[in-house]
Amino acid sequence: MNTFFHAAAPKEAARFSSALTLEDLTNVPRVGIRGKAAADYLKTAGFALPETANRLCRAETGALTLRLSASEYLLLGLDADGARVQALEASLPNTGEGGLYALPRRDSHVWFRISGARRHEAMAKLCGVDLSPGAFARDALAQTSVAAVSAIVAGDGGGECVGAFHLLVDSAFAAYFQASLLDALTEFHGC
Image 1 (tube, helix red, strand yellow):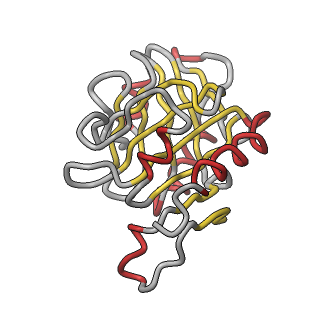
Image 2 (cartoon, one colour):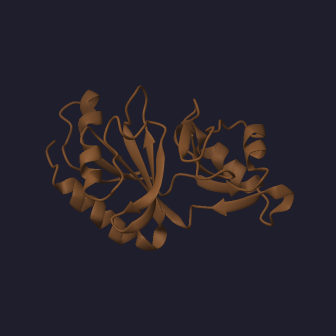
C-alpha cells in the first residue's frame, strides 16, 4: 500500500482519520464475478452479500463486497481477506461454466482510497454525485464519472458516516486520475 499524498501530516497517530489522505491500493487483491450463479457461489465461499445493487458490505475480516448489478459483484481484499480473495479468483472458471464468469480486476482497474474529515469536499470538485454526509450512505456505491472518467465510488465506514471513499477506474487512466485526485486534495492542504 503506497500513500501518494498526505495533505496534512498528523500531529498524533490517533488523529490520522482527520488527515486528508490518498492511498494507492492497486496492489491489493480484488476480483469481479458475474453470472446467474454468482451470489450462491460467493455465499458458499463465505462472503457476505449486499441485498441490492449499488450497495456494499464489509466482512468482519475486512473484505468489501460491492454489488454492481443484480448478478455482478466486485470483491476488494482488504485487511486479512487478501489471501481469501486471491483464492476465490484462482477457483473461478474462465468459460462461464456453471453460470459464472470471472472478471479479473487487478489488471483492468486501479484502486485508490481517500480518507479524512474533508474527503467529501475534495470529491465534490470531481464528482457530480452528492457524497456528503447524510446524502451518501456508508454502504452505498455509485457507478458514475469522477474527473471525467467512468468510476466506481464506494463508501466505507463504521457507524452512521462514511470514513473513506474507494475509487476504482480503468487502469488506462491511472496517471491522469491520480493527478486529478492530487489536484482536488491540494485545495484542502492542512485540514
